Image (cartoon, rainbow, N blue to C red; front, side, top):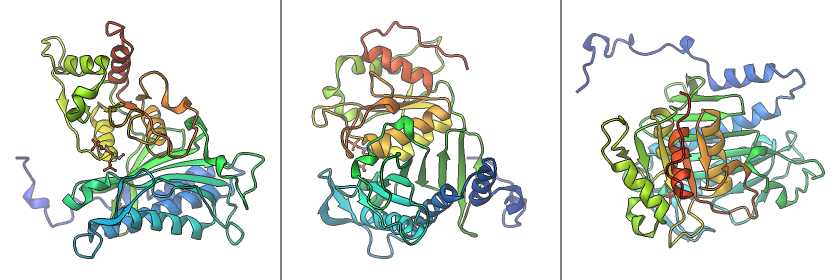
Length: 362
Ligand code: FDP
């Protein structure tokens, strides 16, 4: 068991003062100041998202005490059982974005069609937000970490923000202008990128602020963790099965083998752990999900950009996730994401060339 310094417990001396940390709001404003022509609309949009995340966090922490555990009795557009918290999180994000007025179109995993917002009252309404309001929600009833994933695009030229064509949301991941996630775990963290590195903020619930706890996050070039639902092993293709076997072999010259398996079954949480510690998360095509299970627009694209910005890699096994051109909002994709060397190795196995050199400079 880890040793604790008893003298510091309860004295406040082990707790950081607010002065040590930047709040998310301060950080966003600082970034905004770097662009002299910025109108502040994007900063306000991020603030709206972080506010909704705080509300979802609050409700989640009380979920066992009020009637928001369990299923709604509905299925979502994916045909999956909708949890009450899924519906509640969807509603909170839509309300926050509607109130803020900076977003003209929302695509949500919990809603069949993109949702146009009335932008006449407030804000510029130049942004499109795609989100998975509550990822891993089948874990809520058993107190396991879940998350929110979001992805922001600009409304392309030629579209009217008052009546945006729903197709405006169908942009490749390379067009994202921000992507992030919130993990509601043993603590709540918001991690995001605008293409200038990745920064992580931990929620201090006593003051209701996200504080910059993980500036300039980078992910290890390789790692020892692999995350996959091994229950589907027999429906994986030969290349993937060989890679999984290779990971589990003992090799006295390789400190990372045999690798360790860690699978929470909550993508945000699995991704977050691997980002910090080094590892690979895989959700391939299977017999029951021939196109994979994860959603390109709500899950794969935002996490792929964060992974790349942190020095990692994301592929569907054949090409870069961010370059996939979306055909529909709820499109699925196979996903292999995480430490660069591990993802490159997975690609080599999947493409039938396991001997291909993959080592990368650390
Ligand atoms: P969930 O269905 O609980 O929302 O994309 C959804 C997801 O969870 C991921 O968070 C998770 O990694 C995956 O599905 C788990 O699927 P399996 O149960 O098939 O492993």
